[in-house]
Image (tube, rainbow, N blue to C red; front, side, top):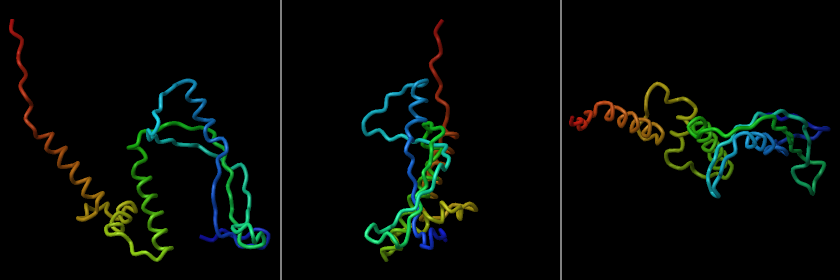
Length: 161
């Protein structure tokens, strides 16, 4: 992606900083306090606005060289969200980052990664693809749901009167 130029210098990277990210969550915790255990994984959604854009040299020893565009975002609202609402988007991002790192380093892509990337890119929407871990998981869950739906209902013990 072309990030343009800053003062005649090529912009080759971009990043973000969110200095007040906890502000929105702290306000929410006042009205709905929670206990979060050490090591517990939680998922947070932020509503942000870009307040400022800073340009910094990628190599501090060469301030006249290529630049990094740093977006300063202000969190206007934040909330905890259940994992199932964000799982696919997070997995897609993880695989995209992995693929970019592998490509940059010249590594061969790990077996099955292409299928996972295709899955999260929506290329398996027409049907499940054998060998794709996500498709295999969907097939297993569908089979478990079908099995549960067809399971006989146990007969409870009636009241003796």
